[in-house]
Length: 243
Image 1: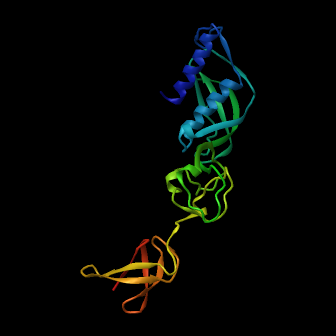
Image 2: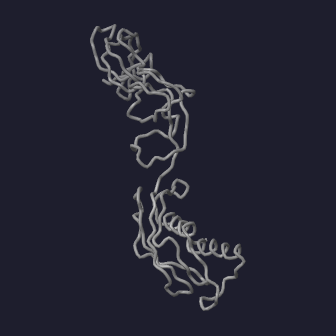
Image 3: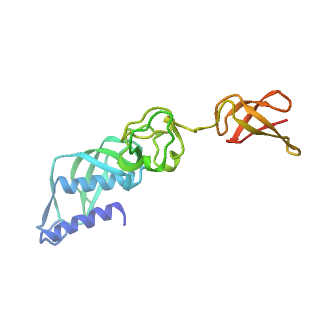
């Protein structure tokens, strides 16, 4: 069903509820479109024009000028005189000319605050700096995300197992830049150095000289050659390098 047909069906329902039967514009029946009906028209237009999915949008602070209009019963249509900005959130305004049976009836200005809703991961308790986050430490809430920085986390799986870079109070929104991988190796740890060039693979015992997370480059001392090299952390027991 198109947006225009949806609006028409909604208003026809209002007519029938009032005990009126839609007739051509020359008939005696007249209907009043109040703030509620005009807001439905505005919402349908925004849902059609916006880049955001309909289920993610919410309106607040709707206003119309004039606040209500009277039009003859008939086939309702509209013409947009000014279009909303598809990707804009916040206050949106547009002008609409209402048509009945193809004839212009009234022009109205409609406006409202356009909000975007979505799932957000928040902390279920206070999480201290350096603490590794577990699944029970997080909650997923649906809330307004219009004004949030784009790096907020919506999937708790992206935060579980990470280490907090700062102290997070209970109920705090979790952002990706506040998390980091926990260190897998620390200075003094014994690891297995794996080195290769694609054809040959060798290994040797080593001692880590830095603290590092998965994927970090750390200094490692080869306990056989006594040389210090740089290697990438694979896990808590393995580092790798090339030769």
